[in-house]
Each structure stands twice: as structure tokens, then as C-alpha cells.
Length: 199
Image (cartoon, rainbow, N blue to C red):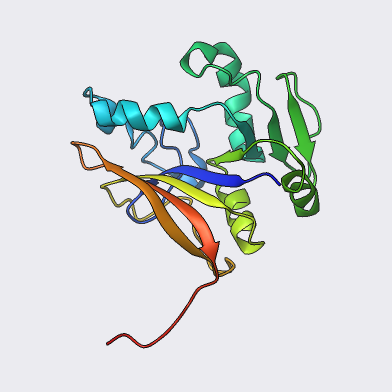
């Protein structure tokens, strides 16, 4: 069975929309595109360690909107992300069914995602794709979370978490903090949510 790893740049209030630049995703009149840029401005050895793990080549699972941003960009900038063209890109979309980007496969519904997850192969990483990520949480399909949380609050924008997610417990397996206050955390699914009385 394949692991699904949701890997996101995120603000303190859970926004994951358009971290890379103003043109990335201005939907909903979002005004803060490129909010991660100031934190990448200065060299930081901790950031280097994080990014080596962040950009490790795995197959990728994307929603339609994130795929439409990536499809014209990454084939022309593959030197920035070795292996991005070679890995399989699985795209959950009701309307898309063709791409010239090599190794792109389209999935029509959650059942096809479940079938993909049940197959015998490597990890699947989710990037961006807020709506699809929320769907994965609703169907309890997320095995690991890899988050880079930036010390800002935006108040608006697409968020990673929404009501309706299946309750699940995760355990912290790795963490790092950069000199600019960006917190990297890696969580693994460990079972059901336990409750009790505090104190």
C-alpha cells in the first residue's frame, strides 16, 4: 500500500494559497501571493536540510487547479527540481483528461485515489491542492503530514484544514526551526483520537 503524504507551505492560520508568487493563484481576489518569499531571501543551512527532504523525488498527487499551475511551469524549470518530469503526476479532476506533460495520469474520483493508494509502489506526495487535500482528510486517506509553517497570519485564502475531516491522531516524527522562525514538522498517522479528562 502506498502512503499519501500531504506536504504544504502553511501560515499560522492554515492558509496554503499561492505561497510562491502573486500570479500563482489569485482566485478569490487573494492579495498575498508570494508570502513565503521573504523567508527564502537569506541563506540558512536548516532551510537547505528541509528542502532536500521537501524536494525528494516521489510520485505526486495533485488537484486540478494546482496541476494547471504546475503543468506549464515545471517542464521548463526542471533543473530546479530534479526528477519532477520523470515521476508520475496523478491528477484528481472531473474535467481534465489529457496533458502533454510526461507521466501524467488523470483520476476521476476518490475511489480511483483509493485504488491508487492500495497499489504496490512508492509514496505519493500532495502539494497545494487545498480542495483535494480536504477531500483526502474527509476520507481518512492521509498517512503523513509534512508542514512548513511560516510565522504570519493572512486571515484570508484557501486553507489546508476544514470541517468534515475524519478524526485522526498523528505523532511528531521530525521537526526543525529556521533562524527566521519557520517551523518544519513531520507527522505520522498513529491511529484514532483518544479523549479523557485533563487534570
